[in-house]
Structure formats: C-alpha cells, structure tokens
Length: 331
Image (cartoon, rainbow, N blue to C red):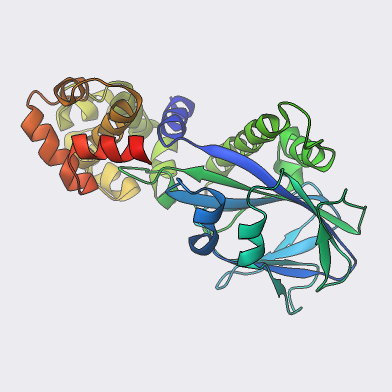
C-alpha cells in the first residue's frame, strides 16, 4: 500500500525530470547555484515547483546549503534539493565559489541538452564542446512538479537529500553514465535521460522512506506507519467514497481517538481535512485531463452538489473549477 500511495501522488503532481548539464572540473573548484525561485521559470516556464539534483560521476566534493552541515560527496553519490535551495558544490567547503550566471542560464535554455561544461580553472569555463575528462565530473539535472492544489510530499522532504553510493541503486550510476556519453542529436536521448532522472528521484524517495528515524513526522512518516498508511491508501484508492473517521479508524484497527491523534501527529492535519484536500487534487487532475462537466467531476470526487464542490475547490485554489481549467489549458 505504501508504494501504491506514493506512486499515486507522484502521478498526480506530474513529476517530470531532465538532465541539463554535464560538468568537468579541475582539481580545485567551487560553484554556487542560485535558488530555484530565481531559475525555475527559466528552466521550466510552466512548472509550479522545480527541484535540482546532482550525481557525482567521478571525483569527490562537498554539497553545502546555508544553515546545514556540509555533506561529503563521493563517486556515485546523489544529492537532491527538494525545496530548491541555493547551494554550493566544491572540492573544499572553505573556497569562495563562482556563482552560476542567471543570464547564461537564460541564454542557453534552448541549447541541446545535456550541455557539456568544462571548467579550465575555478573561474573560467567553456561550454558546448565534448567535455574533456577532469578530476571531477558532475551531472546536474532538474525535476519539476505541481504544488497545487495539494502536494503532500514536498513538505515531508528535507532541504537536502543525500543518497550515498553504497545505499543507492545502480540506476543512479547509470544516469550519470548516460548523461556523460549522451549524443545530444540521437533520437530519444532526451526522453531517455528524463525517464532515468525520474526513476532516480523515485528510488531516492523510497530509500529515504526506508531510513526515516523513529519518531519522524510528516507525510512519508504517515505512509510508513502501518495503520495510518492503510488509511492513506484507502483515501487515495477511493477518494469519492463517503469516508467517516469511524470508517478509517476501523479499517486501521485503531480506536477513533487513537486514530485521530496519530493521524494529526504524523501528518499535521486531521483525517477529514486530508481527505478534502486530496479530493481537490484528484479533481484538479480530472479538470486538467478531460472535458467532463464540472458537475461530473464533482460527483467523481465525492460531492453530490456542484455548488459545494466549487466552494471547496475555490477555498483550496483561490479560483473556481471552470476558471482553473481554463488557466491550465491556456498555460
């Protein structure tokens, strides 16, 4: 049930991956990546949320995010920035980094991907040529997803997610090798890298879920909890069913009071509020993906009244279902 619920959310929020840069560094290097609030729209103009990730194919280094301890990186390691934080990658966390130029990102947005970049020194680089081997080789990519109406996964992830090579799947190393030897003109190359990066991210989520420490809270902790995970699976499997707290508590083999308290502690919101918000997410997918009348969408997610559904949808999104659909089709 855990895997099914996670897959359900990932499909709903339209996870999309890309590999944009393959970078070769000399022995001394340090680069600073701006936060995704500055770059996200340049890279994915229609995306609501953009995450960055890096796969270290060769060499060693450090990943640093302000306010967090530096993370040591070794060959095969993956580091993901789920909330789009600005960060520094380097071979020495004490070095002054070169900041990635936003204007260069914009100017090369439509260049064939992945873009080979060769740093000749800490401050000088060239791009577009086949990357020459360096002391360190890094593959950099991005993942976009929807944030609205409801994405329970994002808030459950840390600012920096590190997967050491010893704990990561072979797909991570394969992604790096695919990018490093990619022929940008080869048919299907971009799609292959996109799917590989999505697979890498999903595997990272599963491994992070497995390693959550006891006492963790958040959506993933709820997913892992046997009783609450079952309730979440039932809600996702049949959001239109007229669930009651008693129904979900009984299915979870918990008393009503224990179920409500545990659900609230783990997810930070009551069961019925979670159900209502997930219904809006399910409705958003139906509005986006079909021409069904709003009244039919309302029925499909558990509302007998179109007016009640429209009020609930507007509370969650700030706009009516019909207008939201027009905005999605226009965007």
